[in-house]
Length: 288
Figure 1 (cartoon, rainbow, N blue to C red):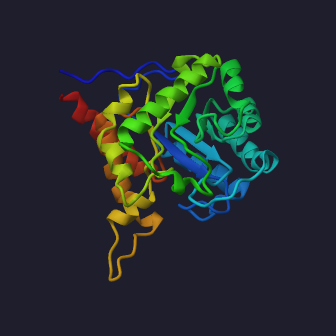
Figure 2 (spheres, one colour):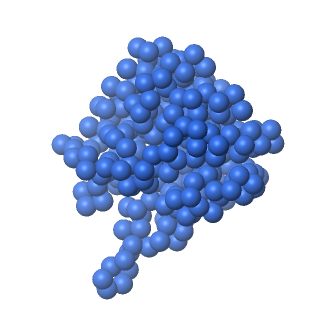
């Protein structure tokens, strides 16, 4: 018996495989690339490179959400991301905006973004739900327990899979009550966000992704280059985690596994390897 088709999402037809979302960090302090794309021209060139390499979506963000990161205001975020969103969309790329600010989401959608990826799921800005409801754009609701500066102090769970599922389900209910259509919603387990490396929270969520898929909404997984992979690959005496830009093979392996499990999309840095991974997973699923 084959796998079930993914649930419908506004504006996105089924493509028969997991989608690949390429990351463009227009920030000076990203954990993964250290500001390589902070300049708008460099970010646009990078985004176009990801698109031509096979990314289904190019995700543009102007605020770092690495552990310990400080917030920036909406004006600075707009200065960083709007030129990038505008140029990528004009070139034909499918663009998402990675933001917690409703005004940034609004202006980015006006500039051509077709999806809002909010790591707070609308909790960081009370105006976000109303904007999403009125605009009709797809909205990624990530599991979130607080801002990056102290989020790791909130990584306490009775059962991480059960608790994350319950909290996402509650968030969906609140958004629907605020007027967001269920078919606008994508869920994200929030790998690395208020998840403890010592307690294997991230691995448990990936291994039991079916529990989130059972919520009946498409699932986005953002595991690329994250610290739990660096911990897995650590070496030396004393053990030292592998640096972020040396975690791409493990990231692609993770992509193949979650795509085979039914993830709707993966958010990644190295697009070509992950395009290959989702194709392998689709062929695997076709044999079930």
